[in-house]
Amino acid sequence: MLRRKFAAVPLATAATALVLLFSIVQHLPGGDRFVADIGVVKAALPLDVSLLRTPLSLYVPALDLPVWGALAQVFLVFGVAEIVLGRRLTLVVAYVCTLAGTLFARIAVALGPHHLLGFPRWVAHVRDTGPSAAVVALAVVVAFRCRAWWTGGAVIGAMVVEAALLPNLAGLEHLVAISTAVLIAVWIEVFGDYWPRVLSGVGAAASVTAQGRTRAVGV
Image 1 (cartoon, rainbow, N blue to C red):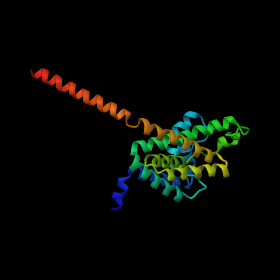
Image 2: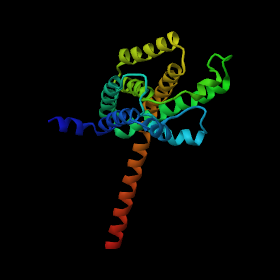
Image 3: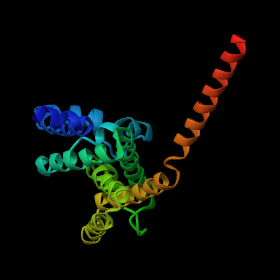
Image 4: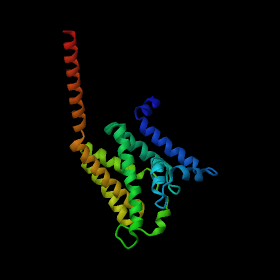
């Protein structure tokens, strides 16, 4: 029975397993260096390196935070998103919003500490990993899809309060991820079924044409 439940949400199960695996590996002797080489992103790194590491950086938990909270959040939110949005859209939202936060870190460092959204140079060497941006982004998109406005508002409000009380890179990245998630949710709402309808129409037209040719050849 438990195996069937996990099989129902394979993406959430795999994401949770990866977070747990990276958490274990990075606490082993030499493991932190290995994880850093394949999945740790920093604003000081070359852009191409950061882009290559971003997919795995989503599953690398923070060293100074308890991993069990991250595991519970990932399994719950990814699982609900996988059921509501589907696997493909869940992955798209998670990675696009994580990438948006990663790119924002570079912009914030480039702006400098004198700008409202800027940070000092040393922030470029801070580890910028973890599933939190993807989790809050998925929660917002799911709330938007399910019309759970109070839930979505609570998530957004909590992140705004966090950014105000603890002004750091992670807090602002969460807000960037939420903003990106809202744009994705609106895009899905407006254009979500546009291309499927177009492709269905093209497929139907091709089928009718093929049937017409077959009849012509038969005659």
